[in-house]
Each structure stands twice: as structure tokens, then as C-alpha cells.
Image 1 (cartoon, helix red, strand yellow):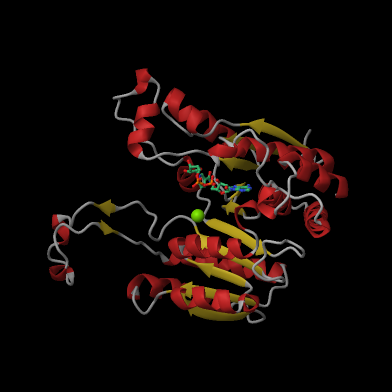
Image 2 (cartoon, protein in one colour):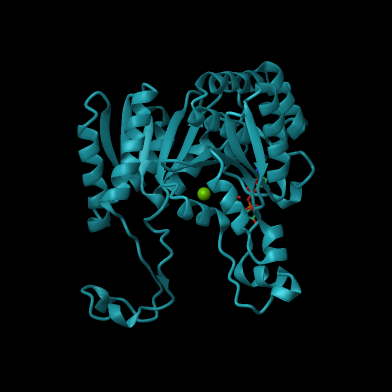
Length: 363
Ligand code: NAI
Ligand code: MG
């Protein structure tokens, strides 16, 4: 009996290159796992009209967690044009398989660790070590939008100032979702001996929604007296992050602010080649590099696989293989610090698989 069953989703473009790198590293770690390949991405949209076929959802339902590479997605018109001729005109609408995965599996935490590895020439500053918790299911991303003001809003106070042809997006924040994401952030802080959690908001403008978020955050914070808690406005946070990045530790926020802030933090520690993420629910998680399929590099093994290898590290920790996770992180740190094997983004000529082999040798 294998201990773990892991869904293996390379996806499109460089997603496949970087998952090959992950395979080299996992083979070397000898994780007691069986990998079940699952279909996701553009190819399946074109052939079947669904980038996340039901059989893939079934595989996710019967495994412990998933490792995902990246997918290609295109705007609506281009998507329709590339559908297999027999499937066109059937009213199929392309929907992001990533967003769908998050919703269908209730992967409500988006966890983005951003650590500056010593010796990385792309670091904004050494010693940055920020962990972003982004709420992954609601906020501005509920998908409720109107191309013009709907009639039922005509009498809503404040709407008299809004032209009728304005497009409208709704933002939904619940106490339940706020409470659970903040709780995950504090639990993480406690488990990892972190000193501080910062809740990021814009409550002075988004009075109702962000009051709900802040109230939940304060309630949870009171349960963790050993961990400092503070709050910051999203705009000021952008400024302070660039000015004093070492002041920040664990950061928790709503969906859109988290999306933006996690990319800002990722760029400070090396950018897309280093940015890993976990989409985590109560019983399932999908780990991935945050970059896309970079079609121009597909199959060329030029992509930096470190983001993916760090996603593997997150997966190991989530599975409870903490020691294995630590060994892997140390091996990555050594390869970066040594500096002789680097992909193009770090100014080197090494291939995706060269980096994976170098990490594997040091595990
Ligand atoms: P992208 O992340 O694929 O690539 C942008 C550029 O960043 C690349 O051209 C490359 O120069 C660099 N880059 C990305 N990953 C890298 C790595 N591992 N090492 C070194 N350099 C790297 O974003 P882009 O070009 O906007 O989108 C390409 C496709 O990917 C689109 O179809 C987009 O919809 C999709 N996408 C998918 C995501 C996902 O699967 N999670 C996330 C973002 C975009
Ligand atoms: Mg993003």
C-alpha cells in the first residue's frame, strides 16, 4: 500500500517542463506516493470543450492532494475559435479551470510564501520572509458583474450619482470566510514561530465589507495573545512593503488585495521563477507555481523550476512530511547560494532539468 495518492496535472506549455523537474526531485526524495496523471488545460478545451473534465474532478476526489503545472487560457472569442469544429456553436463558454477547482473543492486558502533565498541575484532585498494568506473564494471574485446598472439597483441609495451605462462588479465578504482565513494565518504563525500577523483592508472606503473582515480578524487575533496583530490599509501597505519589507511577517487579506499583494511580494524575492502557491481547503489542496504556461518557452526547458520545487516543498509539509520538506528547502537554498547553476531569469544558461538535478543531488 502506498502512503499517498497524488494527482499529477502538468497542464500546458512550461507546466509540463516544470513538472518533469518536480518528478526528478520527488524520485530522489523517495516519497511513498503513487501519482495519478489528470487532464487539465487548453488541449482538453479544444478537443472536448472542457478544460477541466469530470474525470479530472473524480481523480481529485480520490487522491490526497494535487500538483499542478500551469495552463493556457485565452479570451472568449479566441477560445471559441479553437474549439474542435464539431463542438463549436454549442454555446460552450470557457471558464477558468483554476477558479473552478478552487470553488468546487472549496480551497479557501491561497497560501503564498515569499522568502528571499540568500545569493539570489533577483532579490529586492536579502532576508525578506513574508507569508501571504489570501482568501480564495469570495470578495471581488464571485463573478457577479453587470455590463450596465441593473434595474433592481436604480433605487439603491447612492446609485443616483452613477450613470446607467456604468458596469458594476459586486464584492461579497462573509464573516465565515474571513474568520477561517484569518484563523489559518494565525495557526500558521503559531506553528512556524512567527511573531506577527497583519490584516490588510480598505475599511475606510469599503465600510461594510471590510468591517466584516476586520471584525472577524480581531476576534480571531484575541484567541492568539502570543502573536502580535496589526492592521494596514492596502494602499499604505504597498508603500510600506517596498520601504520596509523586513517589518512584515504573516499577512492576511481578502481575495483581490491578496492577489495583488502576493505578486508584489513574489517579485521582491525573484519573481515568477520563485513564486509558489498552495490552494488549500480543509481536506484537499492543490499546489502550483504561480506562473502561467509561457507558450514561447514550451518544451524548451528554459523555465526556472524553483517555483515548482518550492510548491513540492509546500505539498510535503501539508502532507505532514515536515523533515522531507526541510531537506528540500535547504537543498534549494544551497543551489541558489552556490550560484553556478542558474536559469536564464537569474542570468545563467542552465536548463529546467539541470536545476532539478542539482537540487536532487543535494537533498
Ligand atoms: P506567464 O507566467 O506564462 O509568462 C510570462 C513571462 O514570465 C514568460 O514569458 C517568461 O518570460 C516569464 N516566466 C514565467 N514563468 C517563468 C519561469 N518558471 N521561469 C522563468 N521565466 C518565467 O504569463 P503570460 O505570458 O501572461 O501567460 C501565458 C499563458 O498562461 C496565458 O494563456 C495565461 O492565461 C496563462 N496563465 C496561467 C496561469 C496558471 O496556470 N496558473 C497563471 C498565469 C497565466
Ligand atoms: Mg495572480
